Image (tube, rainbow, N blue to C red):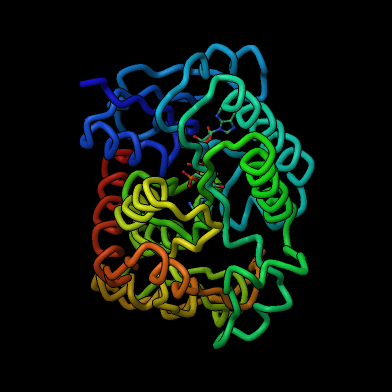
Length: 324
Ligand code: NAD
C-alpha cells in the first residue's frame, strides 16, 4: 500500500512537534520544517529541514511533491507579551503573511492533497469580548472584522487566502481557530510564553507564602485547551468534509485569578497575588463549540485541572534541569 505522506510547517514549535508525533503514530512518512529544531526534545519526523519559509526557494525545496497532507503551523507568534505590546506588529504581519503566501501557492503548484491552516481566536472582534462572563466567539461573529491585534488581522487575511485557493483552484483546505493551547513542551520562559505556562513557572519559582505577579486585575477570562485535545481536533477536522473555519478550544472558562489559584493548589503553595500593569488582550474569551460538535460530532472533554497538573509537573522539571 502507498505510504501516506505529511508535511508539517512549524514542526519545531509547540503544536507542530506534538502533531509530528501523532502523524508518525498514525503511520505517516513525515517531513518537518522550521527555523529551528524543537526546543525540548528530538523531532520524530522522518526528515527535518531547518529553513525559513519566508524564502520562496526554501518553500520550493520543502514543498517539492504532492504530499497527501500539509499542516501549516509556522507563524511569528508568542503570548500577550509578544503580540499585544505593538512593538512587533510589522514583523508579525510581514513574517506570517509571507509564509502563508508562499506555502499556499506552492501547495497549489505541487497539487498537495489536503491543506490545514492554523488560525486563532484572535480573529474575533474585541467588541464582542468586552464582557468577561459572556464573550461571543461564535465562528460567524468574526465579521464585521475588528481583531484587537495585528496577529489576529494576519490570521484573518490568511484564512481568506486559503479559502480563495479552495474557491479558485479547487484546493482542499481546512481551517481551525485555536483557542489558547497549552501543555508540556510549550514555551515556558523567554517572553513568548502564554498565561498557563507563565503562571506555572512563576508559581514553581515562588516560595510558599510569597508573591506572584499578574498582568492586569486578573478578572479577564479565558479558556485553555490541553495539547492532546488540540491535536485530536486538528486530525479530525483535516479528515472531515468540513472546511471550517471552526473553533478548536475549550468551553471551560476561568479568570486569570482562578487559573493562578488552580496552579497554587497543584503546587500546594499559598501565594499573594500582586496585580501589575501589563498587556492583557480582550476582557473575556471562550471557545464556542457548537459548530465543531455539530459538524465533527466531537468536542474536547478533558478538564483544565487535568491538563494543568501535567503541565505544572513538566515545567517544574524543566526548572530543576536548568538549575542543575
Ligand atoms: P510556536 O511558536 O511554538 O510554533 C510556531 C513555529 O513556527 C516556531 O517553531 C517557529 O520557529 C516557526 N516559524 C516562525 N517563522 C518561521 C519561518 N519564517 N520559517 C519556518 N518556521 C517558522 O507556536 P504554536 O503554539 O506551536 O502555534 C502553532 C500555530 O498555531 C501558529 O500558527 C499559531 O499562530 C497558531 N495558534 C496557536 C495558539 C496557541 O495557543 N498555541 C493559539 C492560536 C493559534
